[in-house]
Every structure is written in C-alpha cells, then in structure tokens.
Image (cartoon, rainbow, N blue to C red; front, side, top):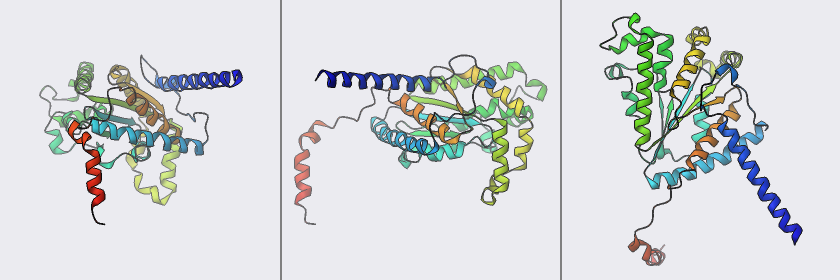
Amino acid sequence: MKYRLDFTWYNCIKLFIFQAMEQGNLDAYKVSGPIRLKDRATFENLDKDDKTLKKELQKVTKELADFQNTLYAHGKYGVLVCLQGMDTAGKDSLIREVFKQLNARGVQVHSFKVPTKLELNHDYLWRHYIALPERGKFSIFNRTHYENVLVTKVHPEYILGEQLPDVTSVSDINEKFWEKRYRQINDFERHIAENGTLVFKFFLHLSKEEQRQRLLRRLDIPEKNWKFSPGDLKERKLWGRYQECYEEAINKTSKPHAPWYVIPADNKKAARVLVAKIVLDSLKKLKDVQPPELDAEIKANLESFKQELEKENP
C-alpha cells in the first residue's frame, strides 16, 4: 500500500514538473522586454518527430475547438489572432491547420493586402476595426495593422497614398511620424483589450536560407508556381531592413494586454503546435468562461420536454 501511495505521489510530482516545464517553454516565446531578432532561434522541433507533432496538433486543436464552443456560449470575449512574417513564413498553412476544427460560424479570416480606394479614404486602422471579432468569436488577421509600420516603413512613399493632411512628401515621414504610429497602434490594442478582445500577436521568425528554399520549391513544383511573384525577390533584397522594422515594432508594441510571441518558423509543424498551445493555454486561464446557466423554468422541465419528444411517432 505504501509503495502504491508513493508511486501515485511520484506521478503527480512528475506531472507537475512536466506542466511547469511546458508552461516555461511557452513563456520563452513571449516578448516581455527588449529583444534582438538575430538572437532568437528560427528552428524548433520541440524534441519531437513530425508524426508526433502532427498528433499533438490534432489534440490541441480539438481542445481549442471545444473551448470555442464555451467561449461562444459565454459571449463576453472575442479573440484576435494576428500573424506577421516574411513571405513564405507559413501564415496560410498555419491558419488552415490550427483553426480548421473550430466551428466555421465562429471564426473569420481576414487577409489584408494593398489597401483599396475605399480603405484609403479612411484612416489606416479603419479596415482593421471593422474586422474585429464579435463577442464569442475568433478573428484571424493574415498580415495585420502592423503592415503600417513595416512595409510602409521600408517603402515610405506608400504613405503618400493615405492623403494625410500633415504629409506632403516623403521628407515629412520622419521618426516623429513613426513614434506617433506606434502610439496609435498601442492605443488601438489597449482600447479593444479593455473592451473584451483578447489579443495574440505572432511573428513567424523565418531564416533567410529557409525562405530561399521555400521560394525555390514554389518554382520547382508546378502546383505551387501560382504562389510565386517576382516581387518576392525584390522584397527579399530588403531582408535586413525588414528585420530592423520588425524588431523595432515588436519591441515598441509588446504589452501585457497585447503581447508579441516570436515563433521559430523554419519548422512549420512545430510552429503550428506552438501557436495553438499558446492560444489554448492563455484562454484556459479565463476562469469566468463557463457554459451559461439554463433558465430555471427550462431546467425544471427538461424531463417533460424529453418525454414529449419520445412520444412522437417516428
């Protein structure tokens, strides 16, 4: 009996240690202070082979889908998942694999491309505001409001298309301008967080060599040719500048209410597991998210409702 008791305690301690290690591993990807991207790994396999990672993702996404049902019924929080990364970082496939088990009515994916004429006739955050999740639902941003301090910072001439009253030439787009944008983005995220939107921001950290290999695959495999654009090579030449802009944006806008996570992206399977786990782990900490209580009268008459249905003729 003593052996069995000791064995049980041993298993409990082992489980506690494993969970603590797992939590610690997830926290390692969160940006809680200044970082340098060159010091962050671009590859991770979580000490698991591809088959194990696939099984783990299935398990986590099933739990995420179950939680979504409760979140929807609870109806007080929306979930915003923001995905940023260089071309070929794996945003599309991550969205497909991580969120495919969620109820389709409870999740919307928004892919933000070059602003339309209508969008340019509003401020740059307008199109993101109207795409925010309803309470109980998920919104996935494939590229996000951060394009306005990334691609526009690499190509400041794009700002001229916004017709801003205080910008008449590229020379007006100075450090003061960018500091204002970071402040506006922080204000935007604070506002939505304080009103019930849970914000997750993931930077898929890809190595330049892995991007080269993925671009080559797009050229080598006929079924993937449509994904390739000559513009990919043009932007690739600006790799260093983009890394600088990403690093600055992450450092200036990772806040407790809207944290950034830097996810190694060279291994797509591990990246998907990490994103799914981080979202699920954070959501499960919401202790107030519970299925709603049935109306007392309905609850008292459940048995009679059941009997009424059972009496119907097939």
